[in-house]
Image (cartoon, rainbow, N blue to C red; front, side):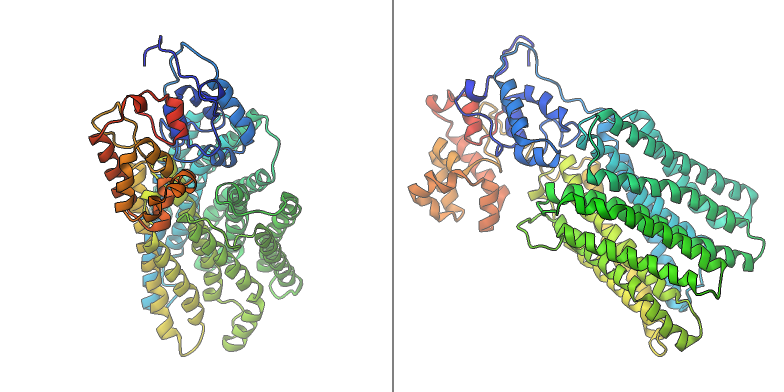
Length: 632
């Protein structure tokens, strides 16, 4: 577009009809590209490519935390200003695409030292029927890869992408943010190898310690960058911010705790000393990592996304405010009493304090989840909703297992003489790590990644294989691992629990291939940037176009709709009323019609019979009002 060309005038100044909250971002930007300046100010940049995601102005305002009336006013005011300047050229910055490295890095860890390695270790346990068959260093390296690589990298990538947009500000020091990825990824990769094999060489031990140092430094820089970004925004602290920053505090705390555990285990002089150090340090660290960092982060993200993105109404934020400090205190108490219990065996007060803190944590989190109304019936059909509801179901299962743990251990002590069940403890952890944390990552990414990659949500799969396989595997693992404590069932339960990991990895593999397909640029089909017809002078009918408006502008399309089964459109009253409020995509979803086939036929008919002179002279503003995309 030449600099001397006048930009179109919209709003009341053009057609008497302002931009409405129901119009989509691509529709608006095709007609008035200068409005990119307004939308970028509120976080559009980096979301959905040059024309933005295929979502309404109202949804964008809600999701990005801006008052919709204010946004519409600014859009229409800018539309009313004639300018001789060229429209802004879409140029994503470093901070706008940084999430890709982190997401792809997390996936690569998941499919190597994370879930795949864990499944192999579990198979070995299942067929040997022995939870101690694997080296503790191999087990810990796998656990570290899942926490730092799978969860940590995904959290960092999502935070770098979403947090600045929620706060309507640019990410602080994006080059440094990119450096944190390479520091984390190098640390995780080196740690997986060096911790497992550190006994073979002092160089490998030094490599593990260096990797740990890199990770701690990366996490500290990451937290500092988010705090600096928040301070730059000048925004007030919201409830979800408090959960996020509390989770970041636990992220830092667990990083130092992990360094302590690595040092203690890799320098243990004897096997007895190694077991004692693991008994003392490992459980408290897992509480900081899982109950502190991961769960609080997910709760914070849920408080922000469930009401705005998914339309799941949340309760008053003051309720969440009231329980944050008690929840964080319960996590710290859990970790503290675990330490005291390990160092003061035989005392009654340490186990009592531990159980009291576990009970408080489970009760508070359960109350908060209930107040968020995650399981309330809604009309949301997005593929990620099933993952989110399943994830919270697994969270409640894990918390219930915590509550009944003393009773179970009492039975186990009577049956075996031992006061600790590795099977039950591991099953409880698995329910929350895979069932809740991993399921939430799978679900949120299923919503976020297509939007960021300019892929219409109507043109991606439902991920049912992933959903079914991961939930089935998790259920088998939790149930049959507990059954390995039952005499007479363990011979059968061990192999089933062992095979469960294969199901989970297979399901995650389907998801990983799908995510890489999107993130690496292979197009599934985009409603925001459709393949253009040869005749670029024609408007293009798209998924968001209103049915009634299409027929009014192109009467020849009526037969196409009728041939695809929309028989109600034969009624003129229906065409002039209800059909003008329903998009083609919505109509196809209601009547189970192939959207791509319908759009192809509609545009073919329009191309074969171009609009007459009166239609061709319609203003771009009028075409937008009718819900038709403009040629670029």
